[in-house]
Image (cartoon, rainbow, N blue to C red; front, side, top):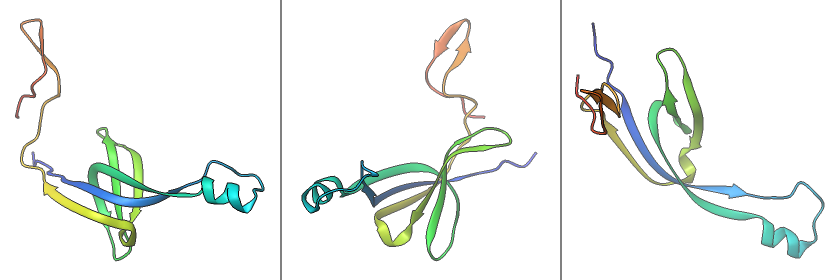
Length: 104
Protein backbone atom coordinates (compact mmCIF):
# COMPACT_ATOMS: atom_id res chain seq x y z
CA UNK A 1 0.00 0.00 0.00
CA UNK A 2 1.33 3.42 -0.95
CA UNK A 3 1.92 5.77 1.97
CA UNK A 4 0.38 9.21 1.57
CA UNK A 5 2.69 11.92 2.91
CA UNK A 6 1.18 15.30 3.70
CA UNK A 7 2.60 18.82 3.65
CA UNK A 8 2.17 20.60 6.97
CA UNK A 9 1.85 24.40 6.79
CA UNK A 10 2.34 27.02 9.50
CA UNK A 11 0.99 30.41 8.53
CA UNK A 12 0.84 33.78 10.27
CA UNK A 13 -1.63 36.16 8.69
CA UNK A 14 -3.73 39.26 9.30
CA UNK A 15 -7.48 38.89 9.67
CA UNK A 16 -10.25 41.23 10.65
CA UNK A 17 -12.74 41.21 13.48
CA UNK A 18 -15.95 43.00 14.27
CA UNK A 19 -18.33 42.10 17.06
CA UNK A 20 -21.33 44.09 15.89
CA UNK A 21 -23.88 43.72 13.14
CA UNK A 22 -25.67 46.90 14.25
CA UNK A 23 -25.44 50.55 13.29
CA UNK A 24 -22.56 52.25 15.13
CA UNK A 25 -21.22 55.73 15.67
CA UNK A 26 -17.84 56.55 14.10
CA UNK A 27 -16.18 56.13 17.50
CA UNK A 28 -17.85 52.76 18.18
CA UNK A 29 -16.92 51.59 14.68
CA UNK A 30 -13.24 52.50 15.15
CA UNK A 31 -13.12 50.70 18.52
CA UNK A 32 -14.92 47.61 17.23
CA UNK A 33 -13.19 46.93 13.89
CA UNK A 34 -9.68 45.60 14.35
CA UNK A 35 -6.97 43.89 12.34
CA UNK A 36 -6.05 40.71 14.20
CA UNK A 37 -2.75 38.84 13.84
CA UNK A 38 -3.65 35.14 13.55
CA UNK A 39 -1.88 31.78 13.22
CA UNK A 40 -2.89 28.46 11.72
CA UNK A 41 -1.14 25.12 11.43
CA UNK A 42 -2.56 22.27 9.43
CA UNK A 43 -2.50 20.14 6.31
CA UNK A 44 -1.91 22.01 3.05
CA UNK A 45 -4.74 20.70 0.86
CA UNK A 46 -3.86 22.96 -2.06
CA UNK A 47 -2.87 26.42 -3.14
CA UNK A 48 -3.24 28.73 -6.10
CA UNK A 49 -2.03 32.22 -6.91
CA UNK A 50 -4.49 33.75 -4.41
CA UNK A 51 -4.77 31.47 -1.39
CA UNK A 52 -3.67 28.52 0.73
CA UNK A 53 -6.35 25.86 1.38
CA UNK A 54 -5.78 24.26 4.78
CA UNK A 55 -7.55 21.62 6.87
CA UNK A 56 -6.72 21.05 10.52
CA UNK A 57 -8.51 17.71 11.01
CA UNK A 58 -8.74 14.55 8.92
CA UNK A 59 -10.42 11.19 9.10
CA UNK A 60 -10.00 8.37 6.60
CA UNK A 61 -12.59 9.86 4.22
CA UNK A 62 -13.27 13.44 5.33
CA UNK A 63 -11.58 16.74 6.19
CA UNK A 64 -12.58 19.14 8.91
CA UNK A 65 -12.00 22.67 10.07
CA UNK A 66 -11.12 24.07 6.66
CA UNK A 67 -9.54 27.47 6.13
CA UNK A 68 -8.87 29.60 3.07
CA UNK A 69 -6.04 32.04 3.81
CA UNK A 70 -5.45 34.77 1.23
CA UNK A 71 -1.75 34.94 0.39
CA UNK A 72 -1.78 38.76 0.39
CA UNK A 73 -2.61 38.68 4.15
CA UNK A 74 0.28 36.36 5.09
CA UNK A 75 3.16 37.75 7.11
CA UNK A 76 5.01 34.42 7.50
CA UNK A 77 4.61 30.97 5.91
CA UNK A 78 6.56 27.76 6.49
CA UNK A 79 5.80 24.53 4.64
CA UNK A 80 7.12 21.29 6.12
CA UNK A 81 6.91 17.93 4.39
CA UNK A 82 5.68 15.25 6.74
CA UNK A 83 8.57 12.89 7.41
CA UNK A 84 6.80 10.03 9.16
CA UNK A 85 3.33 8.61 9.64
CA UNK A 86 2.14 7.98 13.17
CA UNK A 87 -0.06 5.13 14.35
CA UNK A 88 -1.65 7.33 17.02
CA UNK A 89 -0.90 10.12 19.46
CA UNK A 90 -1.76 7.93 22.42
CA UNK A 91 -1.75 4.15 22.35
CA UNK A 92 -1.97 1.31 24.79
CA UNK A 93 0.98 -0.90 25.54
CA UNK A 94 0.48 -3.56 28.18
CA UNK A 95 -2.60 -1.63 29.44
CA UNK A 96 -0.53 1.53 30.04
CA UNK A 97 -1.31 4.69 28.10
CA UNK A 98 1.82 5.91 26.28
CA UNK A 99 1.70 9.48 25.00
CA UNK A 100 4.48 9.10 22.46
CA UNK A 101 3.42 7.95 18.99
CA UNK A 102 4.46 4.74 17.30
CA UNK A 103 6.00 5.21 13.89
CA UNK A 104 4.56 2.80 11.33
